[in-house]
Length: 268
Length: 371
Image 1 (cartoon, chains in turn green, cyan):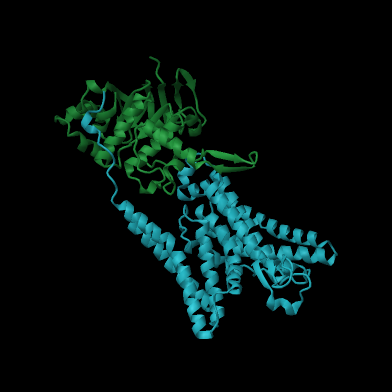
Image 2 (cartoon, helix red, strand yellow):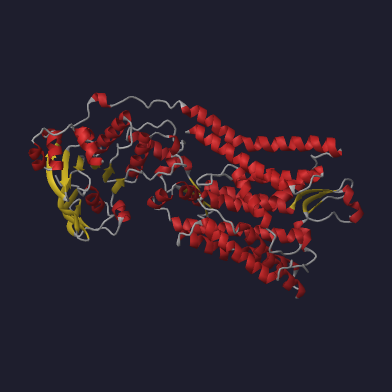
C-alpha cells in the first residue's frame, strides 16, 4: 500500500544544534502512529516540519506519493494536514457550530450579493452531521465552548479538522489535560478517525494511551529515530528503554521503572 | 489493534452546574431592564411627591431618549470595539472633531449662499468622514504596530482634540444656517388636534403661540440614532464581520489560526467606530447649531459606561447592542430624572458611577458562580 505521508530523512538545525537528524517516518491510510520520546528528543520539531511550521534543512516530504514543500502552515492545512495543539485554538465565547466554521463561515447572500448574512442554521446542521459521523455526542450545539468539558472541546477541535477534509491528523498530547473517562473518549475518537481512513500521528508521553490507540510506535531520542515497532509486537518496557537509551537501562542494571512514573519524570 | 469494549463509556455525564449557571446568566442579562424600570418608578414617585410633577409624559420620555442619543452612538462604537478586545478613548474627541469640521463646512457654504440641502449634506458627510482618518490610524496602531488600544487611542484622542481646538481656535463654531436647528431639534410627526397634522415640519398655519397645543412626536435625532442602532445590531449579530469581532475578542490566537484576517478586522472596527462617532458629532451640531471641540468630552466615558452596564466584558468577546441601548437609557434617565427632581445635575456623575460599579459586580458575580 502507498503511504499517505512519507517523511524521508528530515533534518532541522537551529544554529549549531541539530534538533532533528535524518528522521524518517511513513504513515499509511487508516493507521494511528504513536510518536514518543523524551523531552528534547525532537518530536515537536519533527512534527512541525510535517505541518509546515518549520522548513526542513534536509530531507523530503511526500504526500500521496508526490514530493511536497510548503510555504507555511496554511499551505499544509490546505493540503489536508491538520494539527491539533494542546491549546485547541477554540473561541470559548462562541458556540460549537461557530467554532467548527471559525474563519470559514457559511453565508447567505441577499440583494445579489450586496448583503451577506451568516447562515447559522446551515452551520448548525453541518456541525451536527460531522459530529454524528464521528459518533460524538455534545448536549447542545448552541452551547458556548466555555461550558463544555475538556474532552468535549477536544472533540470539537477534531470535528473541525475533519469537516475541513483533514487527510492526516497530527495531535499533540491530546489527552494531557483530561480526566480518565474523557481520555478514553478521545482515544476512541482517534480510532474512529483511523477507521474512516484518516491517519493520525499522536504525540504522547502517556505510554498507556499510546498502546491503547497506536498501530505503530516511532521512538525518537536526541533528534534521531531510534526505533519503530508494531504496537502489538512490543511492550511498554521496550519502548521506554528505546526512549531513554537501552545502554542507560543496562548500566543501571535494573528493570525499567513503571511506565507512568518514567513518563512523568521525562515530563518534569 | 482496537480498543477493548470497557474503554467506551456511555453518554456524557450531565453537568449539574448547567441549569444554575443559566439561571445566573438570566439574572445577568435581565438586571439592567429591572434596574431601568425600578429607576423610572422611583423617579415617578419622588417627582410626584417632591415637585408634584408627572415624570412619565410624552415630553419626558422624548427628553430622555434625546439625552441618550449621544451616549448611545458613542456606546455603539465602543460596543463593537470592546467586543473585539479593544477600547477607544478617542471616541469623544472624534465627536468634537466631526462637530467642528461639519460646522465649519456648513458655515462656509452658508456664507457663500449655497443651496441648503447641499450645505447640510456636505457638513454632515464631511464631519462624519473626517473621523475615518484617526479611526484608521487607531486601528493600524493597534493591529500592525501592536500598541495597546488603551494607549494608542488615548494619544490619538489628544491629537484629535488638539487639532479640533486649533481648527476652531477654541471657540464654538457658530454662524450656522438657520435651518440647521430644525433638523436637530425637530420631530418626525406633529399632531395638532383640530387642525392638520404634519411630518417633519410644523403644521401649516401654526405659529409660535400654538406650540402648547401641538404634540410633537419622535425627535429626528432619536429616529436617526435608532436606525443606526439597528444597522449596528444587524452587523454585529448577523454578519461575518460581527462574528469575527467576537472571535478576535474571544481568542485572538484562535482567530488568527482559523485564518480570520485579524489585522483587517481590527482596523475595520476602529474605522466603523469612528464613523459612528462622526455621525454623533454631526447630530450634535444639528442640535446645538454649532461645532465644539468639547462636544463629546462627557459622552465618551458615559458611552463606555453604557457598554459595561449592558454586560460587555472588559476582556473582549462579549457584549450586545441591546445591552448598550439599555445602558444608555439608564444613564439618560438618570440625567433627565435629576433635572426633573430639581436635584443638582452634578449628581448624575455620582449616580452613573455607582451604576457602573454595580454592573461590573453583577457581571463578576455571575461569572464566578458560573465556573
